[in-house]
Image 1 (cartoon, rainbow, N blue to C red):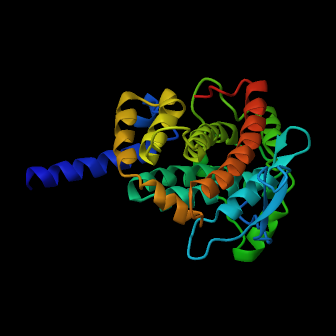
Image 2: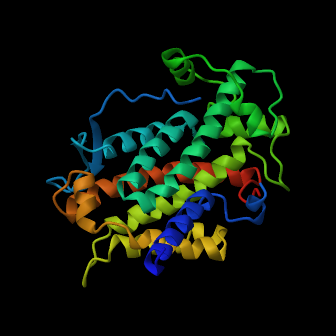
Image 3: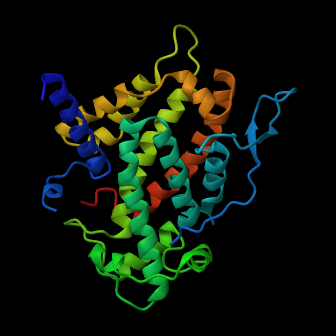
Length: 308
């Protein structure tokens, strides 16, 4: 094998490693170691902005984008459905938000898309915990994920229907925290596959994506637009990088290099220019911010921002 082939193979291995540790915080112990049915029927959603004729707020219809797997209209729909009561977050639309964000990352290319596999595993853990709790509401939930994976579920439509109607222990962020604390499945000293710990990893990644989209929406007063690669790198360094090892931080640089240019994002959300992109992304960022802030408070109130 030539030098170039060896280098290419090494990069692939490194990126796969990055994908597996991206949400894990890069902690040393990793060396050793159902809510799927959410449906949002209405695919036309209102996007509010302050660019009306008289400067007043007015609605714009945000339609589906033909030919795209990722749909910003669905992302916004799930985000707007997630906040509940005065400070809670419904897990069903929260996880569906991540389903759409995974499609967003996968659209950016295979190197960035590698990260989405770890996110899928995290959302799957919470969904399986929810299903287990629904089938055995009085059972003690153990920290071993293998026992969760062994649960027998009903097939297809029935399973999705049950999940979509779930209002039990894993109905919301606050209910999950309360139940898992009461059942003693959250360990503040060592790793477990609790829903709370899993949520924390997703929560950290959500801040990274929020900041990236916020930066992508910015229109510079003077000078050039910065590349999405540069913006994503900057967002990463101020968020997820704080929880990653030196090796993961340096491997992340390879993924950022492969990011597409700004014009790709116009096509991804079906807009013609930066102004239209900014309008849509600012609304998405606002909705992410509401969900993030509520989740942050719930985790902080229960001392869960640094679960191992």
